[in-house]
Image 1: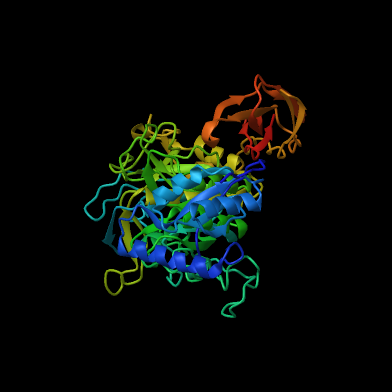
Image 2: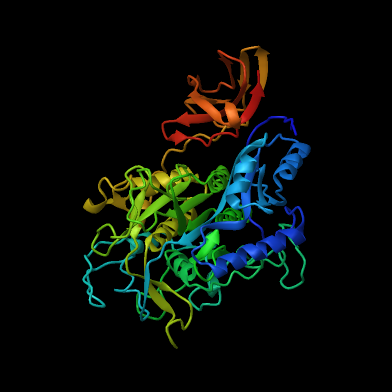
Length: 566
């Protein structure tokens, strides 16, 4: 059987079968059935490594419907859903094949850019302990005076200087932070007033009032079970949410714990189950939901240890960045140098809109469990023995908080700081926010050579009142168009969408055997205010191009790839 293909430009995102998101489903009944089987498999085996019933495939964005249908038919895959954040990406069933066999079969099909297993992500928390409720001295990560507690002796100043930031702002009740996790106990007294509400949806009427593909999603979504109730059954997501946005300022011991943002809206997006495990496909779908529903930053305290990049989630995060979204990622708890061959994703993705966070101790040390990396991990934050909200009465009547340790606990300190910066500077780009976080980090010896900054996030310094904003990188150019000038010449043209670029760079790749792209090349820079360049090639074939604008502050996002055959 021979398939023909019309080539074209690429795009970006991903995945997951959910009973409520019906607009992107090929067959809602089939999708719901496969989703139910996948969720049941994960509940039955908390150590499951990948989804046994579905995989991810991304088609070339200009491949015809007929080509895609033939590819699915030939391999036995059934489309479960597509995603509008990354055109061409689909979740498909494995049919009678194993996930590995289906991935292999799809990779051999013309028009397929990549196929990969739907791997299982897990939380990055280590331990929990019961506790009482006071800001000082227990929430040492925000304000550490060196006062001993619970048999521990902190070092004064080993914190992120939260009170100094609060002199500038305590947040905004209309600013939304997405918590992509095990859900959030949205009824918790320390969180309930700061839970996001979808004001475009009418609760309980069984209608998708806002047309976003989710019925009655009044407070987020449960991608794990496929319903509109993102209630936390694990505790991890509730703990993360408290560090970001617990309501009470408990400096006086008036009850509850304190979040980095006293005023904000937490958007609960549950993709991990009661065991703290969830499919990558659902994580990427949660990223899409967060972006499309207005969250400018998300906390992502989960990951997967692998030596192979997981492309679907990478594409989702990159596409989110093109919409200005900041993705804060926990570095992971494997005591692993992420600069080496053994990676941990999404923490190790090299994307400009990701801030990856290691965990530090109350004595300004690198936590014994924390991953690190001088080029892959951006900054440290308190993550060892952290007090925050937890499932009500989890340890018996009266227990409403818990101590947890992990890079999961470090990341929300940074997420909250990002939120405060965006409240203070609502027009800043993700690059400006990240630059401020990185440039104001407080250096510590334990992180020298272990993170990009060699320091701990300093919320007070980041929000320094009156400090000039970091210079902004240029906006991304428009998706290029390609014109064949001769057998070996192509003209690449694009729209200039910025007024502060120094130059543009054009990347080129050539398609080799097995539909693999090889010979990646960056063409010589093209000056500012230029909107085209000509590439002279040495051999015919199929090529693709993308364009990026640059200045002294950094680079814009790349455009989507576009493709031409010569």
